[in-house]
Picture 1 (tube, rainbow, N blue to C red):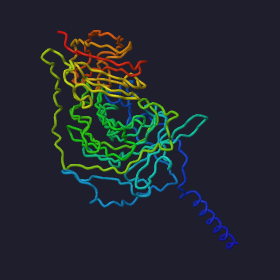
Picture 2: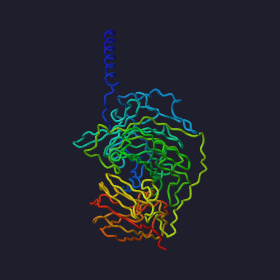
Picture 3: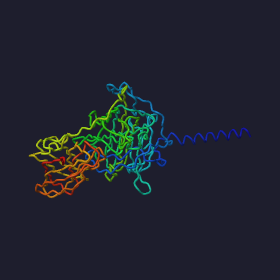
Picture 4: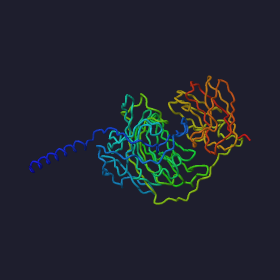
Length: 509
């Protein structure tokens, strides 16, 4: 009897072993895991670059929420062996290597990264579910791949994708972040490299807590990379961008995106080229403000994700190729200086002075045939399918439109850095005509203050004869040295040429 019982016990053990083997070690695709109910957190609705001004205010403020615990999957989560000799990693003068990941292992290093789970619509009205599936987050050929997948659920299109972060694993305050990445191309795809504070409640919920966006690219405009910081109450932001020329895009090859973060300044680079510098920010106004350089004087962590749809990029359409919807990251490297001078003061605002004739617009008479793409004085911009050209000739600005694009700012002429003082009255005036009757819009916007309008979007009807247009407004918001005059000529039902001269913005005493 005892021998019979031992025999049965042996058989049971063998069956248990085979059962356990059948449930692990499988590298096939894992089904998406239904996460717990999320609380809105972290990523925000990002206002586009200076020409991108279609956004409504940001969504509900975010709470300090830890991501839900990650379920077990069939993929190995053991840290991979780093196959890179650190002596081969580039060094930067004054910096030492703090941490890095070259993604040369066989699986994601979970000592560094956490894979997030989030339901669709978690923030920004994005469509994707972030999962821990090995189909959405995986290592391939020494690179981290975050892949967006289109499926069907309940008879409707359903999207999954990947998001990873270093929260509570590789947090740091101040340093140099260097990331090599290749973005996907396609309407509705939205890859990002960005940072949030570990303790989001230290200075208050978003946006008071601060956010640093090292890189964002819209899949339908893969030739433009944005760098942005968000902060303050009321919400404010500062954004720069890099545009590739000659038909090149950030989806063609790997590019290096980097941030140098110091107590009183942040500098953003693309392929070593400085594209954006910021040194003035705040936490809140109205007696709640914390001493500068808050909120950017606390530990932050790094995030990488590929969103699908949302308020900024819009939803995918029939042109979006999900077989190629991959955000690839070749390496992440974080450096830090031995010490930082934290005794910094918020810089005083510098306001542009009017010209001798009182005009706040520089080269408003178009006497100088300036470069219209150098971010100095007049700048001509194309977005969302807009095609056209601009030139200064014979004391006029001439805009020729080949494709009016999808939105009014698809074809745009702007001049930034206008001094806007609370309570002061302003006069806008210009002369304009068109090759045939058509409309354009004019406004004064606030790129650093969530794109509110100091002078509202106003439709202007142009005829083939010169006419003079004048508008008055009173500045009602807090002082801003970065007001922007905009002429928007896209998606107006016409591609007729536009001619302008004698553009002025001046104080009304």
